[in-house]
Structures are given as C-alpha cells and as structure tokens.
Length: 350
Image 1 (spheres, rainbow, N blue to C red):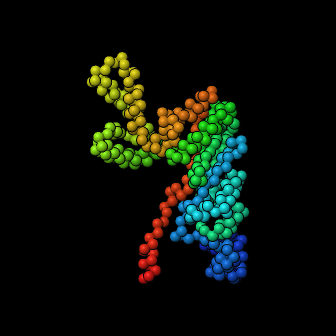
Image 2: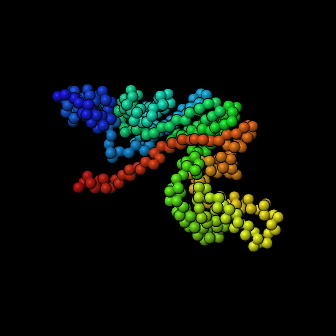
Image 3: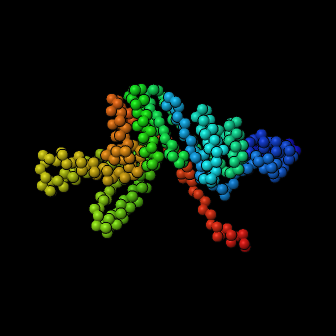
C-alpha cells in the first residue's frame, strides 16, 4: 500500500513521533495506522503521544544572556509532574532548547518543531516517557550599545524574567545592568502583566473597576470592625481613567476642602501636591498591581519602578527607561486537572 503524506501527518499528530519515523512505521505496517502506532511504541518512539486527559503544567524555565548583554532569551518547558522536572535528562533538554532558541531565533514553537532540532526534542521526550511540551519562549535584543539588558531566574527555576532599557549612552547602559537584574528580581516576585498602564485596553480597565472598588469597600468593613483606619474608596483604578478634567476637578475639590477648613491660601501650594498625589495613588490600584513601571519598587517603597530606574541612571550621570520585559512562570494560565480519586475508583468498580 502506498504511504501518503496525509497518512504520515495523521500518524505524527497521533503519536508526536518524528516525521521520518512515522513514514518508516507506515511502510513497515503496510499503511495500517494501528500497527504503525504499535511499531513506534515498541521502539519507544511514540511514548510522547499527545493525550487530551494529560496536562503538562509543571516544568522549568530556561534563560540565556549573551556575554555582551546584547541578547537575552527565556523559555518555558512543561512536564506533567514535578518529579520529571527534577530529572537530569529533562534539565539537559531545557538547557539545550534554550541554547537552540537563543542561537536560531525561530519564529514560533511550531516552526521549531519542523526543524531537525524539533525531531531531536521529540526523541528526547520519548526517552523520558512523559508528556513534555515547549510551551513558549521570548527574546529581547539590543539595537545598539545604548541598550541595557539583564535577566533573572528564581531559585526554584520556575520563573524567569528579562528586562530591556534604552539609555542615553553606552556608559550608562553598562552601568545599569545591575539595576536591571534587580528590576527583573522585582518582576519575578510582583508578577506584572504589562509594562505600563498605557498598555491596558480601555475595556479591561472598565471590567476591573467595579470589582476592585467593591473589594476595598468590603475591606473597609473589616477594618471598621477591628476599629482600624479605613482606606479611601476610589472612583477609578487606573491612570488611564484620570483625564486632565478629572485631575483638575480633584485639585479643585482639594482646594475647596482647604478653604472650608480655613487654611490660608498662601500655604495651599505646599498641601495640594501631596493630596493630589494621594488621590492618584488611591485611584490607580490596577496600575500598581499589574503594570511594571507603575508598581511600587520592592527595594525602595518610596519609588515606583520607573522612578527607581530614573534615579539609578541619574546617579550614573545619564538617563534610562525600561522599554520592554518578558516574564515567564511555569504553568501560569494552565488549568490543572484535579483528579477525583473516589470517583475514579467508583467508576472502575461499576
């Protein structure tokens, strides 16, 4: 029986075995799909078969930074179990995959699978004997020597971050590397989702507003019960919502209160900026949680990340601004299957 490309494709999708092995299996089995699958399994090639009821949500991240800090790559490789992620073979696979992606810059996971390295990856997975997936990767590159980059892998090897900043000079870029590593450490802990509040969609901000305000109201109920100071209940949650008109109205409201309190106008300029800053702080809770540049810096809670970077660059006699970052955390966003052991036993007994 003639083996067609469609048959090879079907067997590859069913077994995740390399293309040439699939063709050979079909030839040996005279085109019988079941026999071809068995042929692959007997040789340990089809052990990485895709199974819908198996979820690869454990695993490791990989990080590689060029010696001259001109490029950085992070990847996430998932396994089914934490046990396999501690396997030396799996760790070596993550290391080699990181090196390959760093060196060849594939466009996507799928494009990497179609290369000779993709076949190597599949064969190594078959040796390990568990469902393993290259889930995602990302790279940042410096356009010139005024770009600074650095990265960080958390001690559990499940979180990796790379950060890129544009500086005024090569000297500043070199001097900023340690600061950028600290920013990457900050991002690993604080889980920013975007670089700046400007990266949020208006729809997302709107969807987050009511829930966040209600959460603060409920928190105040508990604080009141404990007879502790209450938090200011905001009207907004992001700087995206604070238009010039809203900020002008907030300033006018502050001045009206000062007038009502009998505060002399000559000292208002010493009070208003602080109270306006507090208004902005109260009304940007989404930004402080999810936008890297707007988060409170963990190493200096009097500054945002953006302000900390600006200060570090100024200390070097220059300027710097973070322009991009990538943060990968193993299993983030994957819905893990929770096994109901009692139900499983009952099903087998019936």
